Length: 226
Image 1: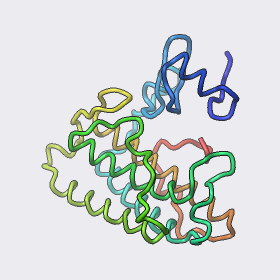
Image 2 (image 1 turned 135 degrees about the horizontal axis):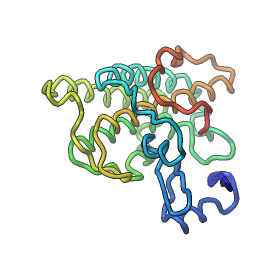
Image 3 (image 1 turned 120 degrees about the horizontal axis):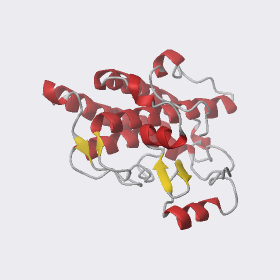
């Protein structure tokens, strides 16, 4: 088996596009079979690994986890020095700290839009923050506004809809909202882990970063920059 790191190997992304018609990672391709890693069950099945969905957190548990993630993202965004907010997150990737802070909350906002009928497209959560979100406080306030919408959404859900069995349209196929919600929760949480690491690299002590207990039950990758 030949393993290609499409992000870091020269020509890797072009190879992925030419063979699979994809420019979005993570993705696992074996022969003519492809699994997009945004949903872990088909990814694990193709890789021959145990299926991760057997002990999936309930929607209510995910909601409570996501509330902690959003609160943490707001705390961390406020800690970045203004003069470093537009630096790269890590040297060999183009994404800026400002964009990553915004992305933590934009991921969640995109889920609400998809619940409302939009398609969760490949780029729906990848847009740049508006110029009005110039500093960490601005981005944190944006995050708070998104969470306020979550509170309204959750409280307004009839009890029979809180299983999140509704099927949503996504770029990785029609998928139960429960699975999409799990995906956005761990995705935002992973970026909070990264933000805490970036603060540490600046010799800034992260304000109450997510703990192993906070993250328990979320199918996060082991490594920070997966």
